[in-house]
Each structure stands twice: as C-alpha cells, then as structure tokens.
Image 1 (spheres, one colour):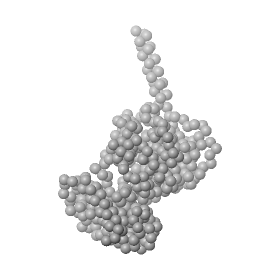
Image 2 (cartoon, each protein chain N blue to C red):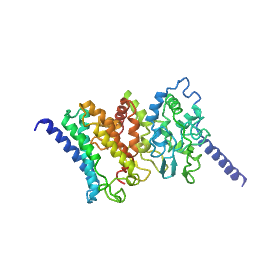
Image 3 (tube, each protein chain N blue to C red):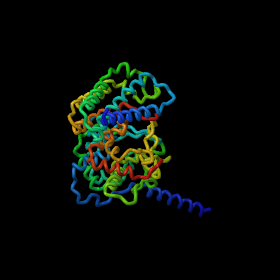
Image 4 (cartoon, one colour):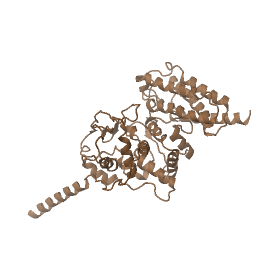
Length: 293
Length: 159
C-alpha cells in the first residue's frame, strides 16, 4: 500500500507547486519604457482617455484631480472600493515607474499581490510603455489626498487574492479583439477603445466567473449595480451616423438631443478633452466592430 | 411658407416624434403621474429647442437670428419654471412609474437647483448668438449643463 500513498503525495505536491506557479504575479519586462523621456502633457491626455478620475475621485467630488478614491462597485463577488491613487502616502506616493507600470499593466501591487479586475488592467495591459510612463509623470503633478483607501468587501473564496492568478490565466489576454486590415485611424480607435478607454469592461457581458465574453464584444450587459442595462454599442444596435457619435463624445448630445447621463457622463467629459481626431477614431472603431443584434 | 420654415418645422416635428416615441415606448400601457408627464413635456421642449440650436451649430440648418434667439429664450424660460409643483416629493424612480428622476433631487435640492441655473446661464448666453459659429461655441456649456444634471439626478433606463 506504500506505492499509492507515495503517488498521491507526489500528485499533491506537484499540484500545489503547479498551482503556486500558475497563480504567481507576473513580473514587468526589465526594459519597460527604457530610453523614453516622460511627456507630462501627453500623460494628461492618457489620464483623460483612460478615465482614471471617473472612478478614483471621491463620489460627487467636483475636483476631478483629487484622486482620493471611495467609489463603490457592487458585483456578484462583493463590493469593491476604488482606492486613493493620489501621489501621497495613502496613494501611489513613492512608487517607482516600474511598480506603477506593473500595477497598471499586470494588475500586481508593489507588494506582489494581485489586484481585482474591477481595476481594468485587463484593458490597460495593452497600454504602450511610453503612455504608461507619461501617465506616471502626469499623476505625480496631481494634489495629494490623505484619505485612506477603503478595504474591499469581498467574501470567501474571492478574498484569496492568489486565486486571481488563476483567473488571469483564464481570462486575461492581450490579444486584440478587432483584427483584420486596419487604417491608421482604426488602429488608433482600437487602442483608445480596447486599451485606454476600457469600453468593453462595462459594455461587454461577462460569464459567471467575471471573464469577458469576447464573442459578444460591446454587445451590452446587465449593469452590475443591478440597475438598468448597459447598452449594445455595436452596429447591430447602435445605428447613429459616425458624425453623430463624434458629436456625442464631444457634447454629450444624442442625435435626437437627449443628453448623456449616469456613468457615461464622466466618460464624455473625459473624451471631450481629447483631440477631435481621437473622438473620430473611436467612432470609426465602433462602426467597424462585428455587429451583434 | 418658405422652404426654410418648412424644413425647420419638419426637423422640429421629427425631434418631437422621436422624443415622444422614446418616452411612450417604455410605458405604453400605463398612465403617467401628471407631474411626471408635465416634467417630461418640459424636457421635450428642452430637447426641441436644443435640436434647433444643434442643427444650426452643425450646419444642418441655416442660421436664422429669430429662430436661434427664440429657442434660446424658451430654454432659458424652461430652466426657470418653478419646481415646487413639478418635482413633487415621492415622484422618484422606483416609487412612481415611468420616471427616471433620482431621489437625490429631493435629498440635495440645492445641487439640483444649481443644475437648472447652469441651463439658464448657458441658454441666456445663446440668445444673442450672432452666427452659426457663436451658436456652436455655446453648445459646449449647454451640453455640459444637461450632462451635469443627468449624471447626478437621472437614473438608468429600464430599472
């Protein structure tokens, strides 16, 4: 009877080592943004396009630069609270560029813990290294908030962060969604939508484990807060002219002069700060994605 | 009736039909609370008026001083309707059918009042807009006032 026990023991050990390796937080490339000189002005545009302030300012705050955190996000797994990411001791003060870049593009904290994907690093992983570096430089110029971050309210087993390593293995892919021939404008649009704007995080439905259903890209989803539906913005449903989309991103007006509201209002506020060519690129992208009825 | 007037009316009618259809579409079988219905009609004229200004700004409609000024004045007046008989307590989303008015309208009346003041200011600035470019320049603040209010005080569709 010795052999089966030994085999079992070996299996357990191999399994445990395998699980440990599979769930390990990913390192950052050693040469990340090497040789790049940070451009704070571009960092401000990246900050707007990535919508950082929409989640990381205090709820209802008028000052969209004070990143004290506090917004809550209800989900099937618990309630997440956006942390303080201002450049002070309660936020990202003292973080190196490498630590910041690993957080944003790999979803790993400076202490080596996985972040929950409520932080859209699954999109931000596609951010270019120069843009991450510029964003880092810009965020150092923002005011410091001393408000401590609020702990997430997440129950077992989702409170075991190591398990997120497995989730990342299953659902975190940097493969682009829109493939095939692309003009320069579509390339830019894809970057703005799939990387910075992280539009798919809300507009694409998720499976039971919270992974995005990429076959239903931007086809709409239930609002995780339980109130209302996030709309389908593929050509299968959204029939606005491309120029209407551009105008909406700039002014917040729909083609029939209703106005943007809810969470999308902050998105439009951000998009209105970008060059017009960027809004046009997003509109072109939305016309090019597969139509889902 | 000249062609301009005809096309203006056609556009206005189109906007009104769309607005009515979108409001009626979700609640075809229910009779709306009268205060909710009145507020939605107020918003229809807001939408109609902004539709005129937006069409001028986009170059879809020729600039006409009388039309622009009238639309801006109506917006300005609509922004200053007395709210006491319209925004009646208890007529919020979830409590009264067919409305997307959030409870924050009543818990934060000063904040809500500020949003209407923003609309009053943005529309006042457009009354004397002297050409299409001036209308276009004012659309940002106008859109900002709509967005600012709908961000905080209008709930989601299909709740």
